[in-house]
Length: 366
Image (cartoon, rainbow, N blue to C red; front, side, top):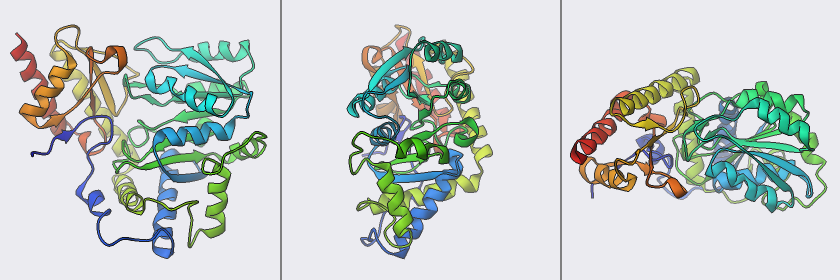
């Protein structure tokens, strides 16, 4: 069966070097070899998160990372305000309510970024203990004004948690400079590695809040346990539990690849790829879901405008072009299709077969 080049928003295509890092004899999750790879990867992740703080690599998904981060920052009975910009924004509510806290959703207008002034008003209206939002909303391709939103929360004295699962590695993140307390991601999207690892980055300024938590912390989900394990056994057993060793070695290789390219060069390449794709879709008469200036560097959502069903386009590209893209979400499943341009897919030459395939499909609809 022919390989379908994967342009869905995760898991993404990965390089042969990353794939090769997983293979070979079984390796242990203890000892100097693995410990060096784990610690080196956390140090490289700090550069991409933009923090001098602690980074945990945890077996699991970005959803688990979000739960760990939110639980660390909230006591039972406290209240988190979530900027609701789509499906992945709204499910942050699960983690908030799962730790016994209250979730308040602040709706974000379709196709537009969150308004910092609306956040300012909301924070002045009621007592809020944590502000949560996605860096990029995967379901729509919206990239939030992360820094501006964090500044408003800072001025109100409220800490910020950011879900950067679909953003990290495709656009700048500067946790410390932007005043973000805790940020999450996953290994399988903008970081160009295999699935299976959740990432939690904690700013140095957040520990006092985390350590003051009174309600139960859980065990596996207690970020303090992960931090203390690294401090106690950095050279032998740096993780709290048995790790998916192959996935850590793969992420180690992926991080070296990212930093070798240079972050500024990488981010520019992702913007150029996005702009090429958006321009090509508009030339075909298709409407983009997100307004200019807020379109994500790593994933774009395009409206079908009633001309076709997204599932038909997805099937046609797979069958005729060996390309896999994604449809929409929920009620918009057939009205939107999504193309990811992350990692090695964030190149004009790599994206051109996608745009050619969409053009060919549209010609057949006439």
